[in-house]
Each structure stands twice: as C-alpha cells, then as structure tokens.
Length: 599
Image 1 (cartoon, one colour):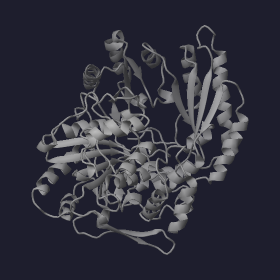
Image 2 (cartoon, one colour; image 1 turned 135 degrees about the vertical axis):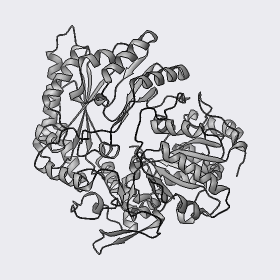
Image 3 (spheres, helix red, strand yellow; image 1 turned 180 degrees about the vertical axis):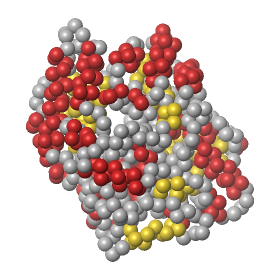
Image 4 (tube, helix red, strand yellow; image 1 turned 120 degrees about the vertical axis):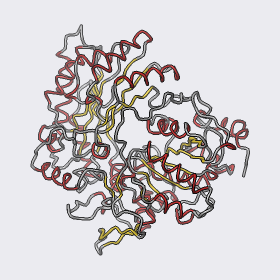
C-alpha cells in the first residue's frame, strides 16, 4: 500500500484517466488545515462523481460549517469514475480525500449524503475502496463511524446493516452536537458502542443496530422494537426552527472543472406548503422557513466577491412561493446588473410566474424556462393535488413567448394513481397547445424557433407521502405508455424524452424497502453494479440476478398496493407530518378533491 499518494497521484495516475480535475483538489476556497492540529477528521462523501457532488448545496453548507470549528477538519470525497476505480484497485490505492489526499479509513467519521436511492451501490463501493468493512457489525474499534443523512435517510432500512447511525432532518445544529460529544468520548478511552449509547437519545439520531424488526408470515412487518432502554420508540427528525440568521457560508469552493450547477446558490427558504401528493420533499422539509431579503443580499455580495461567479441561482423547493421574491429579484438585479451578474430561478410554479419576475430574470441573459404541469388533464392534476390549471400554463408560456423566449421544457409524470390513456393523450395535446401558443405570438416578439421539450418521468411511490401505499405501474405498462405517447408527438418543434422504467422500478424497490434488502444491495455490488443512476452504467439484469440469488422478490416492494393499516418499514420515523393527515390526503386523491396551501 502506497502511503505518499499525493506525488504518485499527480505523476502516475492522473495522466492515465479522463477528467483528472475530479481528483486534484486545491480549488479556490477549499479549506487547508494541518491534520496534526486536528482532533476530529470528517470525510464528507458524496456517492457520485465530482461534477454532481460539487453542485449540492447541502455539502457546501456543512463543509464550511464544520471547517469553521476549531479542531475539526472536514474534507471532501467523491465516487471515483470507472476508469479511476480500475486504476486504484490495480495500484492498491485506497479512497482518499481531495484536501490532503489522506486515506479515509484513518478518519473519525465517514459521512454520506443520501440524495437518491440509485447511489446506494456507490456507497458500498466507496467503503470497499477505502478498506472499510461494508457491514457495521464487522467494523471494529479502529475504523471510523459511518454515518448518513439526507432525504433518503427517512427510510434508512435498506442501508441499516451498513451505516452505524443516521442523522435525520436539518443538519446544521445536530452535526455540531455530535462533534461535541465525540470530542469528549474520544478522550475517554471507552469502546465505540459507548459513543452510540451517548448519542442515542439525541433528537434526530437513528441507530439501526439498537432496533429489531419482527416480521409476519406474509413478509410484512409485525413490529419495530427498540432493544435498548435509552432509545425512543419513534425517532423524530431534527428541524432548524428559524432559517433567518442561521449559518450560511460566505464563500463557496470554485470547482476546477465544469460542474452541473456552476454558479452561486442562495437558499431563500426551506420547506413547502403545496402538498403535491407524490412529492416526498414537500412533506419532509416542512415547515416553511424563510431567509430575510437583507441577509440574502449580503450573502450574495460576499459570495460574488469570494468566488468571481456571474450567476446567482435562488434555491428552494418552490422559488415562486418566496413571500418577498419580487423585492429580492429587483434588488439583486439593481445591485449587480452593471457587473453582468444574472439570475436563475429553478422550481418556478406555473401559477407564480409573472411578467415582472420574467423581466428581472432576463435583464442580463436569457435561458430556457421549465414548467411542471405533471399531468395532462385537470382531473389527474386534482388527484395529485397539483393545484395548477391549463389556463395557468397557457398564460405563463404566452408571457414567456412574448418576452422573446422560445425554449420551454415541460415536466410530466406517467404511472400516477388513477391514470388512464386519456391522461396520456392529454400530455401530447398540452404540448401541441404550447407550440400553438408560440406560433400565435407576433413574430417580432417571439424567439427565432420553437423548442418545446417534454420530459417524462415514471411515478415512484415514496415514503411519507399520501401515495406511499400505492402500487407502481409495471415496467411493461410504463413502456406501453411511453410508446403510445411517442406515437402521438410528431410535430416539429416538440421533443420527447423519458426515464428508463427499469430504473424507476428499482428506485421504488429501494425507496420502500426494508432492511432485508441490504443483502441484495451488497450482492448487486459484488456482481458489478455501481453508478446505477447513469444510464450507460445501469445493469438491470445484474440486479435481477442479485434479487434471485438472495431470494428476494422486488415486486413485493414496488408493485404491491399496501393497506393503510400495514406497518411500514419507516413507521418508526417521525417527520412531523402525521399518518392521519397522509391517509386523509390519500382518500381525497381518489375523490379527486384538492387541498389548498397547507401550513
């Protein structure tokens, strides 16, 4: 095993791979500390490549928060791409951090962020590359604690044999509490399990090994039982009660290569009250907490000064719902327009789109616009509680076309509960109406050529949503709907794209799985699965083989409609939204009744 890998990395490895900038580090605003002066070393691991991980706001916040603490050094780790992994295994080089190039098996914590289920095999692969045992039960005293947080942690069970403990909810406060207790424990000489005992009663901590699962004969869950007295029956997520005035970094790392979202990201608020019945984020990030306009303007100025970026993205689940959006955009544009700094507003809702907002966004530079009707008919939009109308969409695209826009992307979902082929047909009809609206716009106002992109995803039932009990369409039925839609969309100016139904099926399996799935996860990795969210790397046949070898029927998790009284694998987690509320919304969906804005 090579100890001094820094020189070897630059001289021997990087010239032999694509995109060496993924592994170089030393970017502007990355943090450099002397490891000899550090008490706690934290490896923040994003289980995907550099370009995706470096676009993630949560990593930016926690990276700088931890590094602002005395005696703590947080370093970044990303999943090495296929070519780099091959070389690392051949050359006997373990997984290392970008900052110091030190191996992470010598760290105190190895922390993963769980942003999407299809990254799970990468987590296993990264642990193996690091020389860290995959199963938590096999990690003895000298190994780091493996922890995980993020939206997928709300159903932690598929990873329960791998992760030592999960951090549920907002991370800014709880991560510092964990570090404080760890500092004391590290100097005590006590065994690892005693640290887990100490943090077990912290709100937001879930330690899977402290719970046992009892199953019924039909493979459903009979009970979820704590096996230690100090642990709660229900684990409540951690909520940052007030976002205004809370920590936000005044600098962000400027990446060494192009990344997916290469711009300043300002988090304007957290949470959502819209209540779309398929949307997990809209449930688990509640309640809505806003940052003040003044602090956002100050943050923007600091970040512009410290990064040199010329674009600011306003980040939230539904940016148009920010109560002071017009004021904020006007002040940002007024202050920074002279420096050619542009604004981008992702997650705009159709019914919050205004000419005034459009005018502010396009003053410096114009980009495409994205809207998400989600369903083609009003009936189905009522089922999913989307609370937007076709009229809202037509008014929004009319305003966009009259302002010179010509590129519009429309997001839809197929396989939704109660969906019929009439709903599928209406997706094509809605695309045609948007294109017609372009041609109805005076030539002197509209852009040069229409580019209407219709993107189709497949419904995945997710935990803690009103549709968590629903079945998913079969792979063949989803393919049938995709083919049907493809036949209907023939006009020049409209392009259709869709997600792989096999991927959506596996996502549903992992999203609603229990801890028995852990052995299939590990088996799939052993057979060669990694980077499952990448179409060119996804190997569905291998997943089928893994399930078969482990005696697991994936249809049990994805295709089975569940009784609302069934104990679900995540029922021991409390996100703050009651099961009674979710059941009521589920019933209203089948009555095609909507629920307006919810607090």
